Image (cartoon, rainbow, N blue to C red; front, side):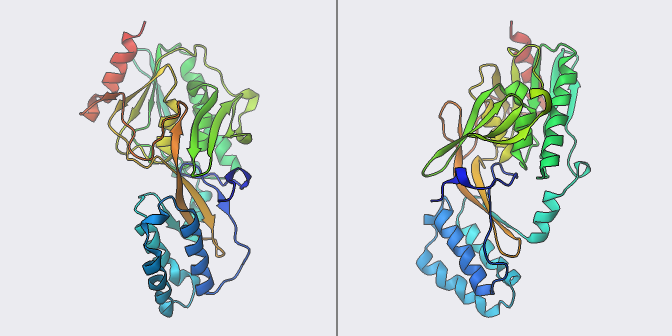
Length: 321
């Protein structure tokens, strides 16, 4: 397996997302499909779930009806479905470009408010957009919200991830850095290595690779010992689960709500010759304590009625000395 530390990062979703380029700028449908099959077979975490002796001739047989590389898309999608990881997917060139250059207005707003109980509330939704400029913008928006709320001298924090269905995890982590704390926040665990993601001095990255740098070393909260209630649910998935895991092991944090979706896995994106992407599940998330995931994340406090989740979080924060 290629050493992923040496690969160029493309900032998406998932969670964690690396971009591989194929040398060929123009391939026949057969060459294109063979490339896709090789990528899936050699790298997918669940590659052994596919009976390749049967799947290969079946896939190549469909080439009879393919005159362009786009005609092979359904074949590739079918192979990805056979992996049964519920996280691998295929992205057309058009969809990739749309997501990469999406605007702030196309995303749900990152909102904050000061509750009557003197608790600061932050809602961190799905974040889409993967340019360096947007990564810094989203990170700054989150830290600006934290700074504004912190100026009101809260007694605790609520971070709501219940509607965070994924997207680009890096600006989420960079933005929430003041509440997450500095140091290793979690790991991307592959078959041959663990790669840590780290927040330090207003930067976020993996191992020694810095992906986002906030100005002035980022914001620092006035009191780093305040309780942080993290709200999760079945719509918390992918990058939302990466953020959830980043709070686990933080002595001030506690999870409230319902189990997450169960896509706490590492997706690696391989770029094909026509600009399409195979986004492939190749690893799982591990928290800073060393606990591995790959499935649902259970809350510390299960709240059966979602409407009561904020109330339970407030109750806990108010109980803290």
